Amino acid sequence: MLSTIIAILGGIIAASSLIVAKKPNAQELIDKLSPYQGWIGVVLVIWSVIGILASITTFSIIGIATNAVEFVVGFLLAYGLISKYLLEKNETAKQKGQELRVKLIKYQVPAGVILIVLGVLSILKIF
Image (tube, rainbow, N blue to C red; front, side):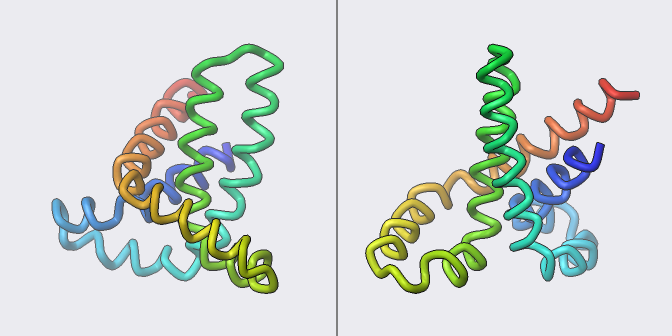
């Protein structure tokens, strides 16, 4: 359940520009979540890698797809922390990470929306 909540929060942050464009009063909620963006992203990246490995062993296509979306959103949200703590000392790794981020950034809003929908569907399935 906690992973679902983190996924929904990550989706909200990732799709924040779309959400604010549709509902301007949502900016206050997004501003409250933004300081935690990097850490939410780190959690999503870790859970998505573990989830992909688990989904491969159970042959779950939906699980792999969900975890792939979580990974993309998590990487984009956590890039600042990843760059600061892991890529800082290696210029080549830092450059490759930035190149990957530039390629994925165009998918941030759609991936965020997908992650919100998958999180809500997951909650509905649980309850």
